[in-house]
Length: 254
Image 1: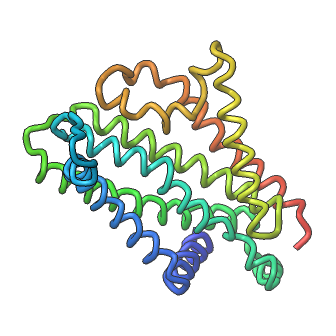
Image 2: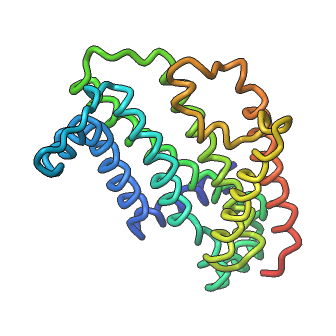
């Protein structure tokens, strides 16, 4: 446990030294501000840019528009940023040969991987919830009358999908000793999830539901009882990716 905590602290220190932690928080905070601002002022901006004589009818924005922006940016930008920042989580150690020194000094290989996963998970957790709480604060300010009873379910679902991507990235980082391999591996994994939806009977087990139907959750048309299957699949995939990463890493020449 002491070795695990020490190596995890090293990972967090590395994220701060390379400014990855600050960059992630800054970008996610910016998105957190932009989500409700876009929802609030986009109709006015569209109206100002329309040619004279042409009018468009746009409904008055609500808090749901702010959360539409949150989940759209969450799946298109936020997850992309975190994948890019974490794609090289093992590459430098392989390149510099530092893993050899750690292992020869008695540090278990699984401890290295679990510390890597924990550090990445903390980076994702802090950044994601900073984005969420900033969006929540501005949304309550601009749209105080709106209600979002199922907000927790939709937000936690996207967060869990992010953890799945991190587990996949770690497995890719073990299989490929560079920063590009994990990106391609994660891209291939996402492609499999999209193709999964081509089979209607199996689609309800697809983890992609957690990142693609958040507004349905928010509006109450997709309930928790309907999410047990993708949640179970997500949990099994995270566990399987971590176990596979340990198995492959134990056999990998450093």
